[in-house]
Length: 539
Image 1 (cartoon, rainbow, N blue to C red):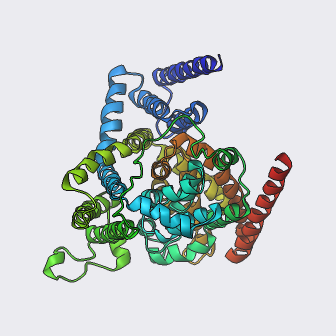
Image 2: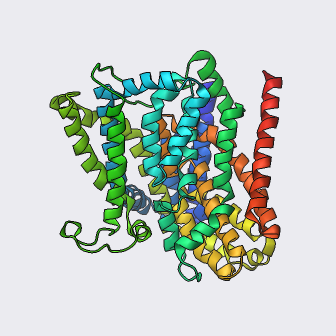
Image 3: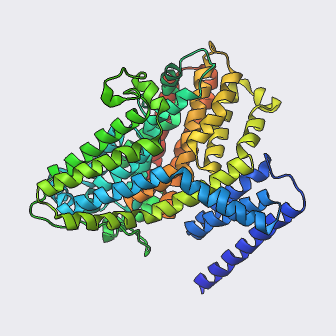
């Protein structure tokens, strides 16, 4: 009966949302560059969290946005959904789709070779506790700081067997992956994120990378997320929905805690497989992917084989690169080398290697579908409805300009909301960085605080949003049901965001990063002590 009632409520909600969209569209209300531009992603996010079903929720958000953009016209609505939404999303992210498939094939090969099973046996001997398994995941996530997509998928593939052996829930694993993806990239001077930020900082009187580096100590959300992860793992202070899933994993051995499963690639036994057969392919993938990013960025010049001079510095190359081209460029080359290696080691036959191609593709289909729909929603909300323009207008208003010392906290909140609604941190700081630069002079110490607030808020909103590509990749890497990952991660992200907000309020007055960080770390650990004590009372 409960299921039937829930279905009825869902149907009524969907009909009401569509009716509202049609009424608004045909009534002539301005939906471009107004609050209505944020309604489609809000609808998608709310329905996903309520219904726990992400595909239909995202599609409904796309339809609502298309209705707004088409003015209620059926033909225009279908055209926006198809051409401006789905087709544009597929063409714009085809490179990432290809990299996902390549990575899926490499994981299938590693499993087929028995290397994953060998790594699992090694991990049982050397990683003896649940805390150790979680900290190992954290450390690996920190080490892979070049790109968030690459981080999510590589860490998930390598650490899933270890987490399963130590009864770490998939929800917790996906959180650990997500928490060491964007936050790490945002404080790493050599990363695709640092390069993207640097490209938006022209006109501030400082070089982009210098401004990025000087803003790192004030990036409270990213830094405090790392403190939070280590503290919650060591103190065993899980709370909210995550605590339920962790208890199920520990007491029942159920790492999923849900009937729904994300199909993955099962570990296969092969007596010839060794741990080295996992480490070498991963190293090859990392090295060649970084090489691909640098090559596409022009680091080796126009003709890299001809011995010409470098086109620019390492930072310049990351600034000019395109991950949607560089990652599949390196991934395909790495895949070819991995196949040759597996054949030379006689771990798989050529036929078995080719059988891994469709297996890897199938394993990545859910992530590809979600990424397509999330990108479609971003395209309609940003390009057709002008959500970015609306937020820019708010930030330049006299009310926002008059807050002075509270500006960092305000910038942080605006960036959080924009990134959460649009699902893109890069798009968020791309919009806000020029605005923040205009608010403060090049010699004003508040420039670094305001810039950090912008970057931290973008990461925070991206971290929380169900339609964020990094969130999608994290759940895909951990093979966790996407909405489950979002619902369990949200309380943790909101906790760190709240503490970061307090730090930005204080920073607006004291303008000292170390005092604010010490305060934030103390509040974080103190909060977890309280939650652990509360858990003991409830046990």
